[in-house]
Length: 458
Image 1 (tube, rainbow, N blue to C red):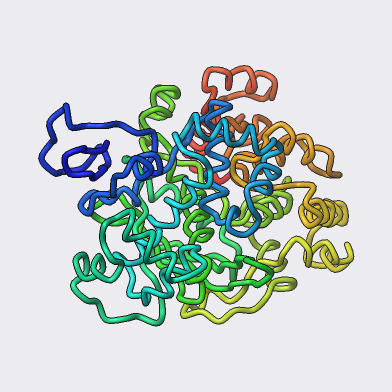
Image 2 (cartoon, rainbow, N blue to C red; image 1 turned 120 degrees about the vertical axis):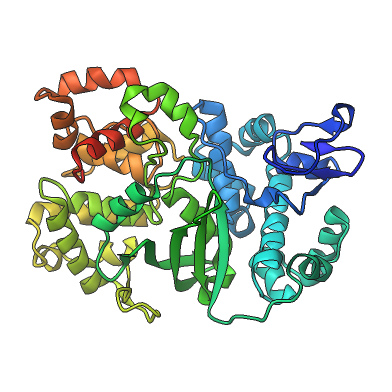
């Protein structure tokens, strides 16, 4: 909502005195409001707003593009590459994007860069020059000019206004990411902790931590992130190692996907009814790295969660890269698809997995490494599912589980899962599939509630 008398736009939750109705203007996105000449409110901070999570085809396509823009794909590869990732023409992308957000993809990306810069100025002590480059601007001069034009403030003045001068920290950057309450942090963190790959991930008390590898412009940025829940505000507190300062857009975007921050819990609850009533705010944990989750899913075929976790830890230790962190539990960065694709089956099988499973992991790695298989939120679901099913050793459970987490598909439904069948008191997968029709288009959330009802993991 924008106010014509102040030229400021706000989130619906803003606590300022409500403006007069005739002074209000409404926009579909922050980018559209800024394109209309409004600057973001300094109190409710629109840059912290959760994202969208639509299952409508056109809206989902636009949101997929928005995620790529937020991830920095436009800066690195251009609009044609964004459209290519989604399997559409750039003309169709612009049309769908404009219908959803009210602006072009380029205008949206520019607003995202500015809002990230505003967040860095407000929440960190990075020098203004580093803020400019970390936000995706090619020059400090361009950043200063556009920031002043849009927000009617110099970046340095905004920092003094919001922070009053904060001593610099060379070790880490701190952020808050908003969500729509309720949020069952206990369930999400327990789920991730039970599946944590030794050396790569760890649940320490109430904090989830993991190592990170982000490639940008041919260079790999290594570091770590820590996520916990705020005791008072509807936000997650995210700490990012300073080594990832030049990779912040994709890091924050992937944390949002991992923690399912775009979810509308009220909408899910209405669809699931009694199934969701005992655990409101239960989310579907996504993936920080789609390839990592897919490998983990294959290693988990027909074994317990604990057994899969053991093999996954060996896999990461054998083929990943060492990293120094402040945490003794974080020592390794998960290997890339390219690295795994080059491994002989025998080396993987010696870690404690059947030879057929090692061949499946190798086939997955080759498909991801050559770009034929894209494991990211909002990828084309049917195309990706078919590619997964075509891999040797990938059945319906594995494909649906990967869609549920790596693709963030809210209607994914691993209906052959033994836990799901047990929770429903069924032994016939066809009857489970039929029962799941009542939970469309949120069957992935139904699965989480069914697993939760049994207190089992997968």
